[in-house]
Image (spheres, rainbow, N blue to C red):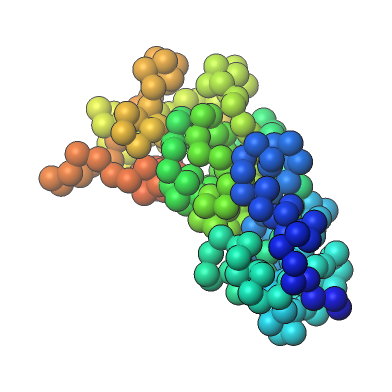
Length: 248
């Protein structure tokens, strides 16, 4: 296998451009980093994996795991320059962007202007674990390197819709349950009897007024001596409680 050492190599330039949302949108590609992350991506959506990029050291150790995919090997020094994290273990994959899809599960969560990449990625992982589809409206780019590191392979494991209005979701028969500090204690909530959509809002401002007006119910999490919880933590508590809580 030839080892790429030049920064002018086409793959190296391609990876550099994929750090930018504009180019991800133009090319229809994004990349994920990390040995386990890439393995999970290959297992979850092999049809979307366009290229595996390995450092020379990683190729010697784990290259046989990716023989079914097109592979490029970079020198260790060059790989370190193009990757976004020190914990990538010398492995990344270039993947096709999935299409936006309308929720299909009985449960979904809509993120309303959640801007922190770590929060978005963590919510995606939690949604997969709890069996929720996801809608992201005006959020941090879900295919940015920071989000994909937090989400792991969740960006390819769950159905994700982009910029789908609450009105459309409600029209499709989902009960709208918005997270709001003034809402009903979620641990005493009457279980949803059909399809439902949890709404989690912006870290600073919460759920927008327009969405709150569309909500059928609002849910809150009881707290001691704190004004609010981290958006990802709150989303996880509500998702698991509505699906597996004592009233379900």
